[in-house]
Image 1 (spheres, rainbow, N blue to C red):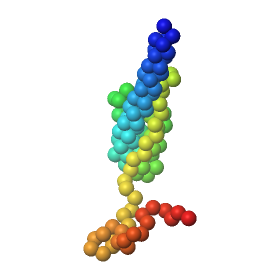
Image 2 (cartoon, rainbow, N blue to C red; image 1 turned 135 degrees about the horizontal axis):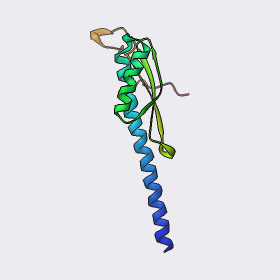
Image 3 (tube, rainbow, N blue to C red; image 1 turned 135 degrees about the vertical axis):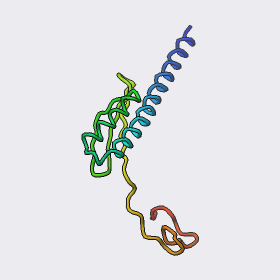
Image 4 (cartoon, rainbow, N blue to C red; image 1 turned 45 degrees about the vertical axis):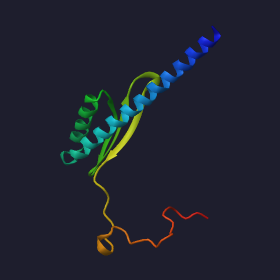
Length: 123
C-alpha cells in the first residue's frame, strides 16, 4: 500500500508540472501573437494597437496583463491559466534593427581569419 501511495504522489507531481509547462507554452505563443498584432497596428496609435493585441490574446484563451507601444515596437505581457498553474510571458515585436554595412562581395560582416574566436574573449 505504501508503494502505491508513493507512486500516486509521484505521478500527481509529474502531472502538475506538466500542466505548468503547458500553461507556460500556451502563454508564450499567445504573447508572441499579441505582440505581432500590436506591432502590425502601431500606426493607429498605442490604444488601437493594444486593443488589437487584446483581441488576439482573448482569441487564444489568454488575457493581456500589460501592453505598451513605443514607436514601431510593441511590448506585451500575457497571462494564461489560473491559480497555481498561471503563467505570464512577455514578448516584444517590431522591425529589425539597422543592418550593418555590407562588406566585400555583399557580405554582412567582414570575413574572420581562420581560427579566430567567434564568442566573447575569455581570459
